[in-house]
Image 1 (tube, rainbow, N blue to C red):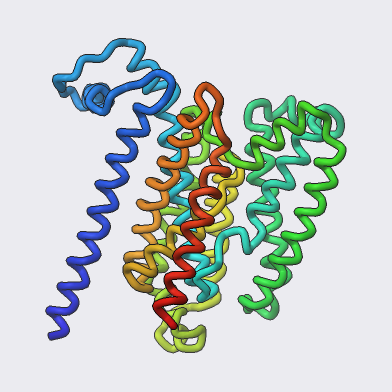
Image 2: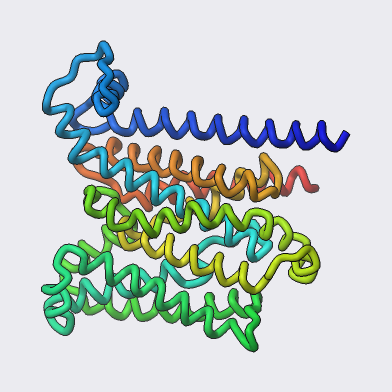
Length: 355
């Protein structure tokens, strides 16, 4: 009986992940063709198949290839990495806090990255002029990544004592530091000029419009660390659902797990904010939706969140590019408009089922 149950559970896991992988593939193919210069799915497949030496019966020209390789290719690649990383990080934080409403912003990484990016923009022509000249193109991403990681480290230091990380203290420290970072961000915004305000507004609501292959390559190590190592802690996060003492009795080093998860989340989300700005709701809605449908098993939730988060961000980016052509809507607005009502519906449905 147990063997049959395990077989059924494993089959379900592979079926779910296979379906989400197919969804991501279809979404990516469609997203590569969306834009002012339309490319059909067949032409997208024909261009991509050339990499493997195959020829498909859909004609395309050099313009199609140039748009796909230079503009939409890096944008879709970065969108997949950011969407997957935000969703996996959200799932890990919900498991760590044992709270389905937790998200990566709780540890201060998003607010810290935002504060550092705003400071970099506002002070670029004065106090940070030399730094901006040295770093050049990487000036703003480096500032955002450093700020996110520094604030997360500060929150971690406040919550840790005697070699033990207290989750409740981590939450409270995150709330306090987030509030402080938000206040300082507002102060810097108040002294920004008109040009800086336009940059701040668009950046703070997220965008993939400036994506290029250099950004993808620069962020790839941090994305991969997050996406490949967090699923390694699936069993430990499952055990933590029972409580820290129970997880320790099952043989897991609870403090090591908590520290590793926080560091990996800080690396991944810091990179997301540095390269794409602040994009909300992906890390909150995606794992919560999967948990409602598939249960609390992180062996499914973590990889499933990566696949569904990437698909959802590509859909949001496609809407951001197509709803106001030739202008582009910040992607954070789209994820907020889509995510907020949907999440409220999920909460209402859960309440009705529970009642």
